[in-house]
Length: 153
Image (cartoon, rainbow, N blue to C red; front, side):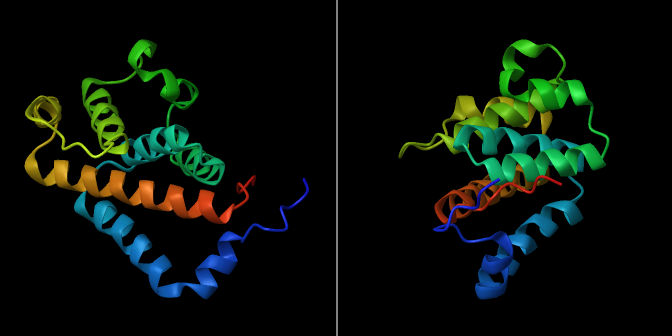
């Protein structure tokens, strides 16, 4: 694989922008420490990364999800979650919320958007899920903007 000469590596970003990197990592740790299921957050990160076309983040979160032993069928079908029939109502509500927040287009999330969310997540979990979605959207934009190469191993 030929490296894009205009791309910055993830490691170079981490070294040159330590404060920004560590702040984003801290947001993720907040969610992990908050108790939201790690397999769920990895599926959400994968879906948002697919939507945003971030190869680095798609591959990274596939790698993490595989280490967590997330069902391979779910990993294969996350991009078609609405029709797949393999996701729990909680996972489906998380994907719906993730897609809504990723596609804001200057609009606020409405009551109908949050109703489905609160059927499956309490207030604390909804906040943690929202932090996850906001953080992965930030990572996607950084990784795509700086052209991070996917972590293939």
